[in-house]
Length: 89
Ligand SMILES: [Zn+2]
Image: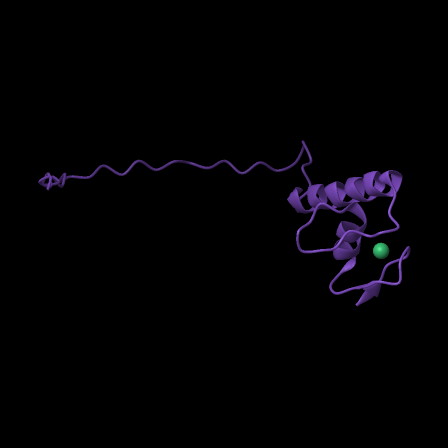
C-alpha cells in the first residue's frame, strides 16, 4: 500500500498505480481528488516513459562489433510429400 502524496488515500499496488491514480482515466483506480492537469500531464509522461523503457531491448545496439555470419543451409528433399486435398463439406 502506497499513500498518495496529495490525498490521504492509500493505493494498493505499486508506484505505477499511484501514478495512474494521479493521472486518472482508469476504470480500476479512482482518480485523485487533489490532482491537477499539470500533475496529470507529468504523471502521464512518467508512465509513458516507463512503458518505453520496458519496450527497449536489453542488449546494447552497438554498431561495431563481431558480426556472426549465418550460413543458410539448403536441404533438398528427395521425396516431396503430396498433400491430399481435403473435401469441402
Ligand atoms: Zn490521491
